[in-house]
Amino acid sequence: MMRTLSLICAWTLIGMGIAQAQAQGDAFPSRPIRMIVPFPAGGPTDGMARIISDRLGEVLGQTVVVENRGGGAGGSIGAKVVATAEPDGYTILITPGGALTTGPAVHSNIGYDPVKAFVPVGCVMESPMVIAAHRDLPVKSLGDVAAYAKANPGKIIWGSQGFGTAPHLLFELFKLDTGVSVVHVPYRGTAPMLAAVVAGEVQMVADVMTTSLPHIESGTLRPLAIAGAQRSAKLPDVPTTVEIGYPDLQSPFWLGVVAPAGTPPPVVDKLNAALRESLAPPRTRELLAKLGADIKIGTPAEFGKLLSDELAKWTAVVKAANIKVD
Picture 1 (cartoon, rainbow, N blue to C red):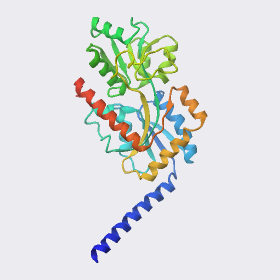
Picture 2 (cartoon, rainbow, N blue to C red; picture 1 turned 45 degrees about the vertical axis):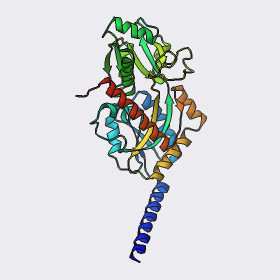
Picture 3 (tube, helix red, strand yellow; picture 1 turned 90 degrees about the vertical axis):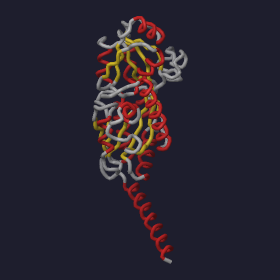
Picture 4 (cartoon, rainbow, N blue to C red; picture 1 turned 135 degrees about the vertical axis):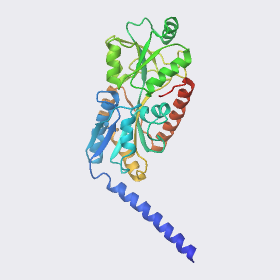
């Protein structure tokens, strides 16, 4: 009898918990939402986040405020803000892999567990990453870069958006594949990195089409390869790394949304559904396409698998490259 009563009480409590979570989802949102961008204003993540936030606010009926919190390994400062926020859906992170995969792969003491601190909401878009050289560097292909670097060890300087970002680890992969000596200089975001390569302070970069294309079109940067398996419609004559014999050298730029761990599933599902609706209109897709973004909306579970796979990949690269963080 007592066992039966205990089971009834347990199931009652479970039912109450489910009902409460569902009620939270139904009521959400009732106030503005903070969308944390873990990079300075002016970069590709910031530009895309502002387009997405405007539409997301319209769909949810609440203002979505973009807050730039740049700094840290791959954007870890902004990620910490979300990791420690109330798990209610009112503080979310929109980020590429830096804060969730490459940064944690490089920094074991980054300050949060990328798996346990967040719940995936969904991947929202992808954009090809292009490897490019300053016009004064006498190369026309990645093969030329490897040959030049072997003949001139330490003379090529490769800039990245920061230590622990995907472009940084793509650079490390290039070194592993070719065995060349190339110098890495990390900057605090895309804008200062591009300013450096335009000024000739660095000779090589890997960047998304969004921000690198204007400099390619002006002739300042020479595109060498698309870091992926498919060519870009915007640069149809530029080969992929897979085509030219560097199959491991792949790192498409993606943008995804996560919330603090413990956010109720109905709230996560509502955010995912709102993102889908936000990115459905042709006008929104056109705006993002101008930035080089291909809409890619998946489920929270699919995004979770992407995060897990990439964390494993970049952790292996960090180990193979023997990257040490003081």
